[in-house]
Image (cartoon, rainbow, N blue to C red):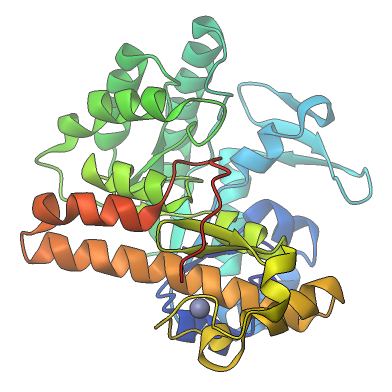
Length: 348
Ligand SMILES: [Zn+2]
């Protein structure tokens, strides 16, 4: 899922999203609650009409943003009180508030309100937040009333395999439509994340509901998580690095700001069907970035989202045809270095 924080995927028109192959996007409950306000969006006819997007939308619960505010929030058993990052005004979110806001937005999939913690937090902190997340999940199930909107629960438990297993058992025992794996894609190493998934996902072998790992975005991280049984992801990463001139290509990434691309007549990636590669040279993109022209952000974002969603389509195709294990080495090469890898390659 590309991320449309403020009811827009930054720099893109909804037609661009269709073209890059987005079949569902994520919108942020916290941001839309604060601005323009969920009631205002409901008054205009709901989030789909408001942003002119007729494919599915998943809204997150607001928990991640609220709890990430640090000194700007206080969490108690009933909910979280926080200060707006926009104007400092004081607000309160409870599981019931989160459900009401998401129902007003009218997303296709709502997500239960949770208390995520930084993966490396002490065990006692993780345990307390995980138990609170369970109580809040029950309240979300009770409060959720739209039969035309799915509800996903969130598994927490940090990096501790026992807490993770207990959280999987609890959340999977609720009548929710999908299972989010929260509290990862933070400060953990890939090996720690993979160990958590190896502890949690096998417990869901006979569970047909989708499994969604929240916040993961680099191609290699996606591949490793799919291999461990994850179905769905969201991330701002492909779009964010694109706006910095980092363009993903098979085997790694190029920084289009580098001087050597100023005279390069080829596309960013040979054979890429995106808006940028179909019509423009690396030299033109290098110029747009240097001149800080707005078209740079649209073209770069279209390319990275096309690369990411095409990569996921390749994975799905390999899974469907039963060739995923055989295709894995090739997919791994295509994905490039692990997250944070600064290796720069020239693809052609
Ligand atoms: Zn492209």
